[in-house]
Image 1: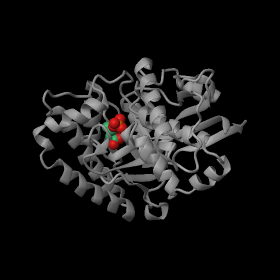
Image 2 (image 1 turned 120 degrees about the horizontal axis):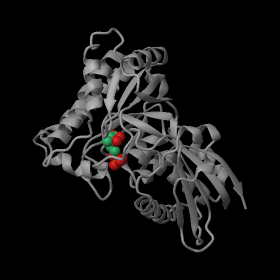
Image 3 (image 1 turned 90 degrees about the vertical axis):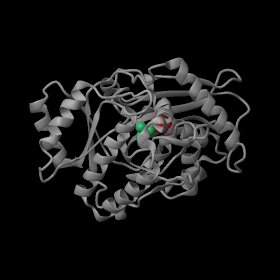
Image 4 (image 1 turned 90 degrees about the horizontal axis):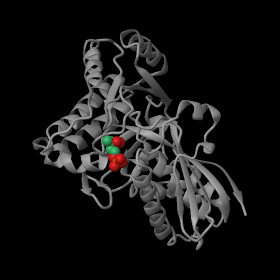
Length: 360
Ligand code: PMV
């Protein structure tokens, strides 16, 4: 049995959004989704044996971070630690139950302690529940492995059945976390299959995500509520088919390496998701005045030859995806136009990984 194990899992940004569920209790999506893995914006989870027989969860454990990461963060991982603790413990119980049926696992009878921390500022428009749940799932599964080296071998390749299985387990804790197990581009379909678009399939594998941080306050409507409320919008009618059609167009744009098509499709998708929010009953919005100012600024640059991919998650912040050199150019222009704007950025990557472990 592993004594202490540290896993890291990246966040991801969806170009085709997971919004609206076919089954809320199991996080079954109403339609497929597709995202880029944000390797540089990660959460960490450490699993050790707990002092008692109970499972324990500790949030915001800064010792797991490097000094650079600690300096860059400063905000807690979860806006509501008590609620987060409950969510983590529920997921530990689920992992115990599901993994006890696996021949490679020896689920311990003693309690485990799960410590987590976020390597990026919480509330900055990056899905920390996706990265943290993915890190927790991987850390628990690996530490339950009878043979950790064999587990590493089985987990190592992107297309491995074990990776897909853990992605599926993680999905039950936070839907979008399943896409954090692979990269750089990951699709999650309605049959619950999570798959990587293999790197040679996409000439657009090297994009960088520049996050324009408009507001870092916790959101007023949680994504769980948003999933329920979008179905009350009159625009929900036909949404599932539109999303599936757009998903297949995004897949083609990625395969053909067409940044221009990708930008158009992502723009339409972001507007459609936010229109669902704005027309739900009752309506709600994540946008601030600054979000709208920025969207307007970009609308004046629509004809630029290298117009970037723009998208918004369920939050006010804007994600700009472009090739590295273009990203720097956009950042300079934005800094001139909006001197107080802050940024985060991340390259794409290959998904969740274990950093180190010690055995008893
Ligand atoms: O995984 P959840 O339930 O937090 O849903 C998040 C969904 C979005 O981030 C808004 C979109 C997506 O596909 O990531």
